[in-house]
Image 1 (cartoon, rainbow, N blue to C red):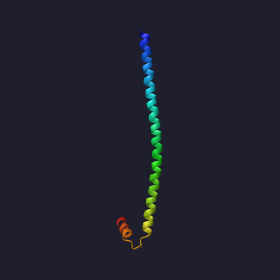
Image 2: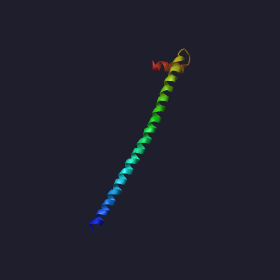
Image 3: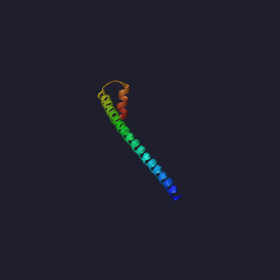
Image 4: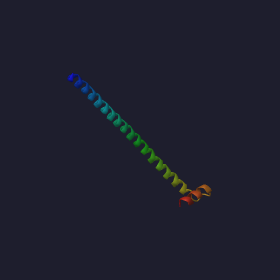
Amino acid sequence: KKETIREKNRTAATKYRNKIKKGAEELQEMESQLSEKNRILSGHVECLRNEILSLKTEILRHGTCESPLIQEYIMETA
């Protein structure tokens, strides 16, 4: 009888350890995927920042234009 209880306990412990190990592996995989996604999104952010800077520079180059929109933007950002 003790041997049966021990065997059930051993089986339950193994099952529990496997469940914990699987959960940890899933979390590591999720962390890896999210890190990659973060890297990609950070690259997009950098590209967008560069594009904003380029567009602002282009607007400032047109400082002598008579366009009310450009003049308004320049006045607001000055």
